[in-house]
Amino acid sequence: MYAVVGCGECNALWIVEGRPETSQCPRCGTTRAFEKRRQFVTTDDEDHAREVRASMLAARQGHGDAFAELDSFAELDDRIEDAGVDEETYLRESGVDPDEVQSVAPDESPGSTSREAVVREALRELEEPTESDVVTYARRHDVPASYTERALEKLLRAGEVSENRGVYRLL
Image 1 (cartoon, one colour):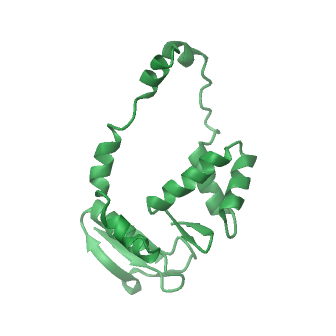
Image 2: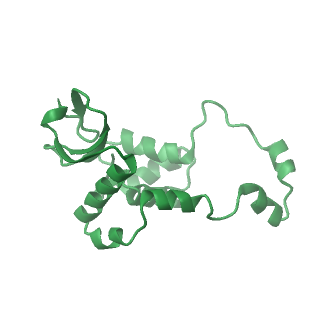
């Protein structure tokens, strides 16, 4: 079972799986008995819970009509597999031998962090992260500003981040 619940302190929305005794708000950290949390929807389908939460977040930001025009998460997930070209095809069509690239590409070490992970880390670590704060943090970790800006927009559209008066929150 999945429930879309809200925080009475900061109005954050998140999805809780199962029926825990307590739940903690991912934004402000308030811990309450699960039964005392406002449950907007309860469903056995995780995608349905994601849709409801995303719809509520879009409506809060004044984008309810635009959200209504989007396909469901399940349909978007299916379509993403067919979008674009794979890495090997891209390299080959660009005149680069994919096998050669693989032989000289450095392996990801266990301690290395992906660009998206750096952006998420910035959102967790910074006190009240604005876009410029996150960009600055990411630059210090060798993530380009253009990537950081696109990643923030992508996380916002996916409902994994909220933005209020220029301040971002990881949900």
